[in-house]
Image (cartoon, rainbow, N blue to C red; front, side, top):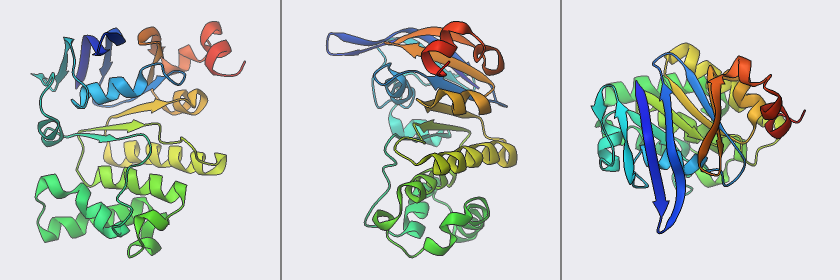
Length: 236
């Protein structure tokens, strides 16, 4: 599915990602955890060509997509939901969702079917379709951002800090939605999170980033018992 091989990323003369490799298989959720500034978002942005890779390679479904233009990455089915939600505040919820399907040039019948899917998966948005995105609560905006991503029929869904700034009860709803997406659509997911406990609880494999390096990696069910990981990220 996705293979990131020995990539190195720089901002001017400062190296942000150091020889990072990781893999996402077609049937799994992979979490990338680490503190603020560890390079998690830079790694995601590099995969979708918002940041240039200086060396290394990114392979998706057998094709080298390293540094392809971002719109070509989207056409290949990699959908990135960035940190901070980034919805269109001045568009309605329905219009935001339609924007998610724009790159597919979806016909009206397919668009209606996709909207029905979103209605079933995100009941919180059903009564908000005519409401402007900017008037939604933080949790509803995050639901909308994820739903908009699904409108693009992702072959790989990348979620960057989906729980950031949300109340604990809403965080649980967001993670329930992520599991529901995996179960009902079988879409592989890369989940970047500072909330290590929640991320590791729902993911198959985890990579720990520290100042641009992968310091630990492995099955989430095993890593959560690693003493160093527990002390640094799991509050024990």
